[in-house]
Image (cartoon, helix red, strand yellow):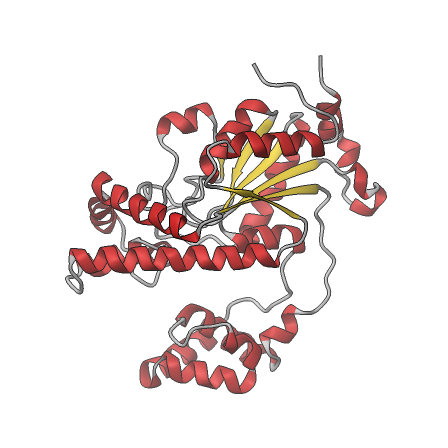
Length: 341
């Protein structure tokens, strides 16, 4: 017998082409399980899948890459067999994956999951992807190879800090949130300005219509003690080294024509191991830099979470956090779903 919850989720009328045709409170639910790296999102997600009629969608810009398993803390084969994850292992390490493509892929999967009578459970720490999913994308110009070539030539001559200063003169708001060495984002911001003659920060504020016919139940796993999260991060990176992270990247560099500027190789951990393999740093410095970079990533993720609305927080350090999250979701879902056998 199909539960009332499943009927609500699977009814095609709740997934209109035009969301305004159905009252917001009748839209099907979608669970967002968010949190910083090393907060235990994967374990909680798997526990939820065992208890609720959910299907899991990964919201992780690193786990999309095939063969990058250790450094991305990808679930092991046994876990993936028990609780399949959508949007894991979908592109090669020398390919690229954008927030726009994630939004398209995720919306398609969410519709299919609801049509199967299940609830989309979106899990990860790539906060930009969550925002893009619910708020859409700004109407920015497409990349222009000729403009980028000019910007790259300028960077080779003067350095990225000089271009960051140039960006600050035409788009101070964007420049203020970028580091002087953030080549990729500085390049994009200048490219947008050169093409449109308008600051990217102004274009990003332009109102837009967003298609997202779901009621998101936003859950965040955050640490009550930041120092303990830092300990987890350090322990996890040590485990990655023990599992063969250095060998994993050495193998990838042998299989693909990789470059340290590629998105896959800019992932935390991989870019530090790249420097180690090139002989630029030693093993002790590799550990130090990778752990520090991961802590900075966690800090940025927590900053994103604090800026989001309607988020229910749970202490990720509590041993019963999965039970607490499940109990909360049962009170928020349209009808209390049955426990899966």
